[in-house]
Amino acid sequence: MSSSYLLILPFCFFLFACQNKPSDERNESPVIPVTTKKFSSKSTPCPDSLISCAEVEIKVPFILDHPSADLMNQSILKELSMIMENLPPDLNSLQDIPTKIDSFISQHRSFSKEVDFPQLWSFKINFDILENNDNSLSILLNSNIYTGGAHPLNDISILTFNPDTGKKVIFSDILKDKKSLKSLIVQEFRRKRNLSDAVNLTDKGFYSNEWPLPKNFALLAQGLYIVYNAYEIGPYVLGTTELLIPIDAIKPLLKD
Image 1 (cartoon, rainbow, N blue to C red):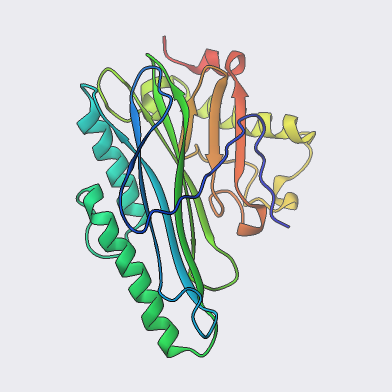
Image 2: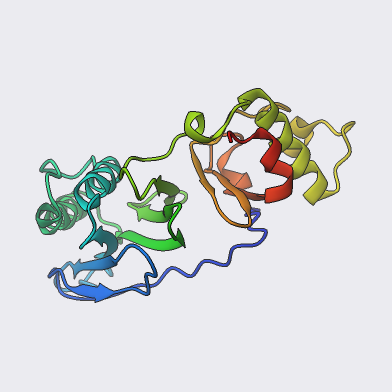
């Protein structure tokens, strides 16, 4: 049974339909204006005679009217490019997304001709703003891709930016003690799950009792929010592991 440990932050991922055309939707943004770009399409007919269908629903962030907008948008585009890397062509701008959508639908059409079995494919990307203030802009990207098989591929990516420079924040920018953070993460996980130090986490399905620093994190006003996607610290069945370490616990490890 898949489990997800979302302890504090409630996220809602919305789906949109816009017939493969980008459109703008302004979000509430107190400091940095973030525009929503939406793209959507599906195979025709959907479903077909075999009850097959391919649907794409994409909502991505785009920053306007800010001195560091170009640099932040480049980082967002790079992340989107990795999510959509199996769909040609290269993603050089958001204007390439409709062509990538066409590639996904074309792949579905070609594969459907080869097999005599319903093919229900989907490609979804959504985002949420975790924090937007003078100190940081943190964006969570959620992708969910299904092209048949036992389960969909779901990943969370977090991009945190320094509004002054537009650069993506990495752990070395904010931490003075990475080793202690690794220990703190596992300690906090055990505390939240009421697991004593004597409990071997491998007995709970995790790969190890010592976890690497997460690839996805955001330092928020409430604390350090971290995400481990499936396969990073355990098999798919464990799902996504999410944790918020309270700000008072993380403060001693932060740079001045």
